[in-house]
Image (tube, rainbow over all chains, first blue to last red; front, side, top):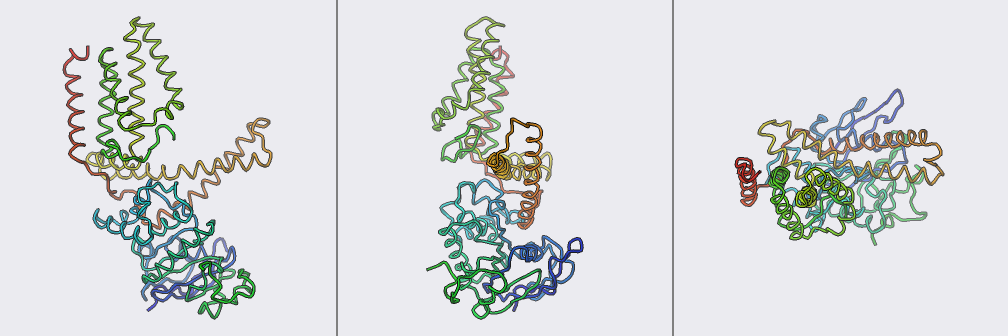
Amino acid sequence: MDALRVEDVSLSIRESGILDGVSFSLEKGSFSAMCGHNGAGKSQLLRIIKGLARPSSGRILLDGRECSAKERMRRVGLVFQDAQMQMVAQSVEKDIAFGPENLGLDRDEVSRRVGMALALMGLEAHAKRRPQTLSGGELRKTAIAGVLAMEPDVILMDEPFANLDYPSTLTVIRSLLELHEKGFTILVVSHEAEKFLSHTDRLIVMSHGRVVVDGRACDEYHRLVENDIYIPPAASFEDLTWLA
Amino acid sequence: MTIFHYRPADTLLSRMNPNAKLVALLVYCAVVSSADAPLELVMSALPALLAWLVHLPLRAYLRQSVFFILMALCLALSSWVEEGGMIEMAASGAGFLSMVLSSMLLADSTMPDDLARSLAGALSHVMGKAAYGVASLVEVTLAMIPAIVDSAGGLYEARRARGASFIRHPLSSMSSYAAGVLGDLLDKAGSYADALYSRGYDNAAVRHRPRYRTSDVLVIAFSLLAGIMFFMFPVVAD
């Protein structure tokens, strides 16, 4: 069963085409990568899947059923590129509680979800800290925890390695692998394929608003270069990770 | 460390409910500003004692309190000119400083969003859900402050690095700088709105607020009682 299915989604703004008939699907529990050069339409597509923007045409299905933008807001988690901009509260645990509180959950359920998200991301020791005092990796983990606490069916991540140093990048990759092991359906959007691609099952490449590659990551990774995505020369699929 | 900023610590004050601290502060300020000089002097020592008990970094804060100290001196001087007594002069200066110190203690021991939520909880009995909307607005504004500071600082440095002088052409430099900051903030506000709505942001959602403990109820009751007693018996006030 597909956790997420995007069918023929197009988006035009002032007669300029941003997305042109994008279609793909994500299997439940899969870990997929979406790559593409700047301006390929990746971030706009994520906003549409999440329900933050309306497509000109096409539909989004979750578990085989077409869902309204409001339902997608609840069932799809989106971690933004700028984690700092995602922080709304004065402490890590309060920030993680922000989403569940918006869902109108009672205090006990909010506490359970905050505890679960803190444990999943290994942030228990930072629960009381102010987000401004966290490192880049910790901040990104807090942003992911904030999304996890809403218990989404699908997690979308927009450039999760952007502006992170080497240790923080490793921290985020490890966190993603742990989430994948726990059965979450994850789509990572990034042009930094060399950092994580070998851990993914599926590769989707976008160019000029269209899906130009969609297949098993281990079979299709060599097509990244022809679509202006850097991978180290002569690298095998197993080399495409920063984890030793 | 900056005055009127929250400082994470595990103290008696930081564990108290923000509303209890706020009630105590308001009653304290009302009583101190209405008391006669000897009582005002005695009461002025209370916040200082509390500051010592909770290890408020007074030495660091003192450097940033020059404005308040100057204000206290002005008040003391005008009181001396008007009334002529040394006790009155000392009391008016000390009373003012003790109110500033009390506010510092509140800010130092209370997360701003906790205060907003607690206030919303109390006001919701009168204003209904609108109170949570106000608290939410305060929280969101607080969260935006680092972005505003970053944006303003970053743009200022970028312009200085490219030789911009704010002295030679102050008007054009400042207006172009302000337009740059505003543009950047509008971009950030768009991203921030996306981030809020993606987490189901509801302005009027009932947010969980700090619970009241027995000690908080006692502090509120004692403060209110002391305030009522003080204003009901003019013997004390005169």
